[in-house]
Amino acid sequence: MFIADLLIALAAGLFIVWIVSLVFGTRGPWGSFMWFFLVVFLFSWAGGAWLMPFGPQWRGIGVFPIIFVGILVALLLTAASPRTSRRRWAAREKAAPDSAQEKAMADAQSKADVDIFFWVLIICLLLFAISRYAWYPRIG
Image 1 (cartoon, rainbow, N blue to C red):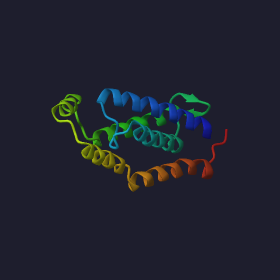
Image 2 (spheres, one colour):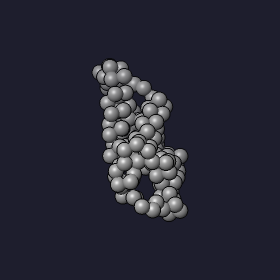
Image 3 (cartoon, helix red, strand yellow):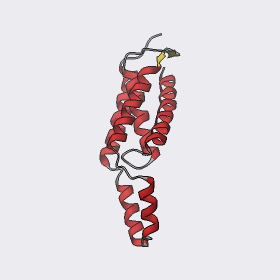
């Protein structure tokens, strides 16, 4: 069950984040597809492990809880993401080329966006998902 839950959450998380990124033009609050995917995937996995399975099943795993949790979290993170339209971004790049120092400061700021809160969230989600299999194993 562990591997099946993990695979379904992985596939659902990747698909949901890809669709949300295309539709809304965002990569989550952290500005990176990878971090956005990681958070949606872990929430989907934990939610799918703990919620009562319903809907179509694959190897005894309910697919709908995983998908619904993934969609909910992706939309919440998208709503919390800063918006910059592609036109404004292109106009800003054409208007004034940045100096090397300004680019270095922007890179440092983007690296600092993934802070301690993010890592605490990731660790808690991992523990939450794995604890389901340790304390309440599914029999069947």
